[in-house]
Amino acid sequence: KKESVSYFGRCVFYSSKLIFKEKEIIVFAFLQLVCIALGYYLWVQVLDWIPEEVWESAKRSKKGSVADIVLLLWSFVCVGLTTYPLGLLSACMGAAHFLHENGEESTIAKCLRIVLARAWPIWIFSWLDGWWTVCRILDRLPRKNDNRSTSDKLMAEAMYQAWKIASLGFLPALIVGRGVINGCKDSLGILKTHFKTICQLRIAY
Image (cartoon, rainbow, N blue to C red; front, side):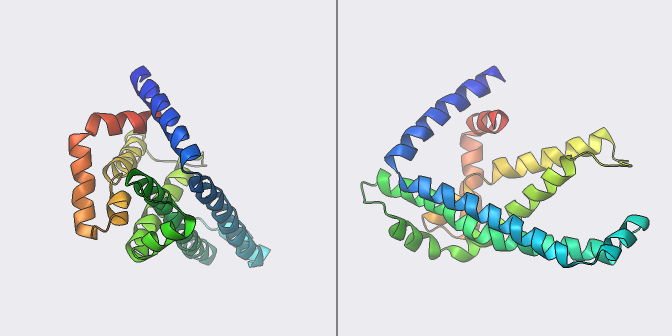
């Protein structure tokens, strides 16, 4: 664990240097925060439209209710709407780095042109990753009458962490023009050749 934190610290230092070198990344990161705030605002606003008696009925019901279905569907839609710009902005950060590494000028417009050409697969990936992340965050929160065993909780967390580790190279592969299938192969290839490093970063994160 100490080794992971140390390695993570070195990576943070390197990333900080890149951020100040590739200043457009700061813009992309700020826009990501704006997207998350707007997505949350949209989610809350629509929930306010549901009459109070519907929520009270849902509380009294031990089984699923209409309110539960509406909440699930609306949450899924909000995650999809939010992850579209979030995914593109994350990809833009990667595009900016690739441009600098190739000695080319990196601008916001140029990064967007590169990323928008791969917008569809980036969105699908970001939506899937974002929905799973939201579900994991909610699943970690304390709840009443939680009948799940410790092993079930650990298995759910392990599956999520395995997904994050295995998919690490997928987005960069899409940015450089690889297809979905080749992107999956590239991501698994990175996992195979740099397994220890990736696990150290994930543990520290």
